[in-house]
Length: 428
Ligand SMILES: *Cc1c(COP(=O)(O)O)cnc(C)c1O
Image 1 (cartoon, rainbow, N blue to C red):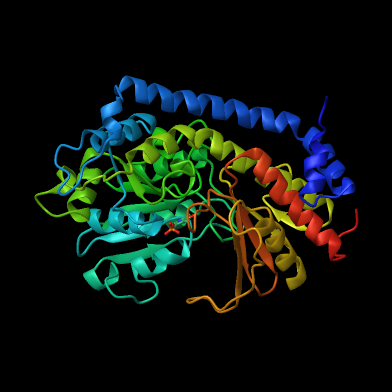
Image 2: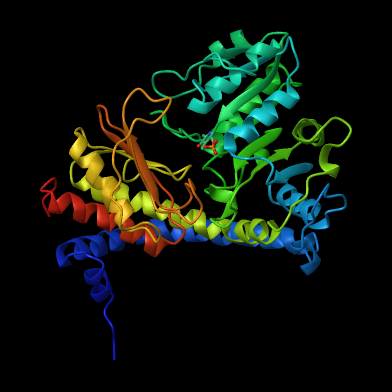
């Protein structure tokens, strides 16, 4: 007996028209999905190769308590990260609480009073404004006498090389380059473009530390910023490299000295990487990293699928339906609140956890408008899992990302289409 896929879609509330539109869209995207699968294949083998070369063993999965001296699983995992990212060393810890913490740690440990930090790619991610002290904040780099300068991208999205040359001075110690656009509207940087920028900066002043905020970018391409000259890459384990399994954590991979500085700041001068018990978390860290390439591929397919459907409905989508991808974030502009809300309702209704609740706009601390969020994740706040959010203000953009498996990302997007259709916001 053959069971048709559409039967289960109908059971999950997807109408025949929406299902067929989804199938037709998938058929058109087959060649692009093949390229994503091929990247994932390469990256999967890259991770596997690193695990084999470093002799990961069953004992590595056990973990330690207390001080965590001689935690071979933790130390080996850091070697695996260093092998995959082609760096001298890495720090991969559950004590790093999130991406912002990892970035703050990398910055605060490698900068000293009197140094200057430069962002040559415009305004950094929101939460970094407080780390740097762009918005005054307790404990910021500014409070410690670290100054900041910024060079925006040019109108067409290219680097302002002249501006960057002028901004580099005797105090400039570290350059921070954000790979993903985050919630800005500039394009995400490809690893190749990051390489060009680093080369330019190092020609002016070779000793500058080039750090890349790698959030949402890991495993999207076959190379990473450390393959094109970055001294340090930094990211969150509840995004791509945690593969959906890591329940917490962050990483810093790079030059030995940069990682060492970060370790002394994370724990204590004199202690560094030697302490920090991994508790029982190593199996999820290892297995999540092992799954990360295919999980990232699923999320990428979801983003491209959404861009293609919504561009056809006449909405502005960013990146557009045909552009190359360098991170997993998709934004869609609805122009009115109903679209944004219906989209988030659809994502929530597709979740494995809390699918029965309806997301509602709320006054989130630190935002000047209400925000709506959809997330029914196994790991709270995880944005490698299917999730969407957006501020309730013009132009009513939704930011959509994640999907641990492609079938789940696909269902999530079809649920959004169904919700939009049922409310009369689109015609199919
Ligand atoms: C998510 C993100 C961060 C911050 O990570 P959190 O885990 O949310 O603190 C920083 N930079 C970029 C580009 C991000 O996407």
